[in-house]
Length: 116
Length: 110
Image (cartoon, rainbow over the protein chains, first blue to last red):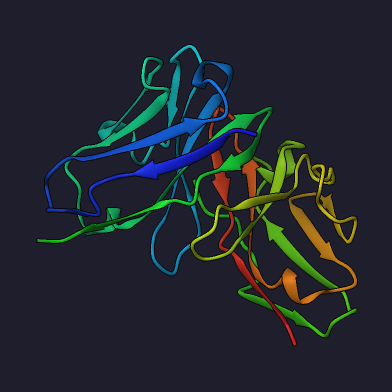
C-alpha cells in the first residue's frame, strides 16, 4: 500500500514562504490524485486544495491567492507552497490520496509554526 | 465555506453505542452523497472510517456505520471498544471540486 510522509521546515517567520513536501512510497504519484489538508491547533481540519495526477488544481477560496501545488514525478513527491504566512497558518499539514471523493491514505502530518 | 457542525464530545461505556451528528447545508452534506468520516489520533495518520455516507472501507469493523438525513449525516459506533477513542471528523464534498470538514467530536470510552 502507498505510504506518505510529509516534511517541512517546522518553523517559518511571518510574511515568509512555507514549502512542504509529501514523499510517496509504495506507488507512483502519477497513479493518484492528491489533497492537502491542515489542522490548526485545537481546531478541525481545513481542506487546502487538490492536485490531480495530470497537475490540474483546485484550491480553498480562502487560500487560493497564496497556494501553489505541484507534482515531481522524478522524485515521486508532491509539494505545497504557501506564501505570505501569518500565525493563522500554524497547523499540522497533511497530504492524502484522493480517490473518488475519499481521502483514503494519509500521511502522519508535519507541524508548522509561524513565529518570529 | 463554513465548517460542518459536530458535537464537541461523545462518550459511552464499553459495549454501548454512540452516535455523532454532522450538520451542514444543502450545498454540502444535503446536496451530495460524498460524506466521509475520519478518525484522528495525535501523531498518527488519520484513517477513513466511512465514505459515501454509509460505506465501510476494507478493514473497518462493522461496528461503524453511517447515515444521512437531509443536511445532517451521522456516524454510529456500536459495541464501543477502548480502541475507538479518538477524534472523529466528518467531511463533505461542497461542489466546485471543494471540500469542507466538520468541527470534530472527541469520543471517550468510559
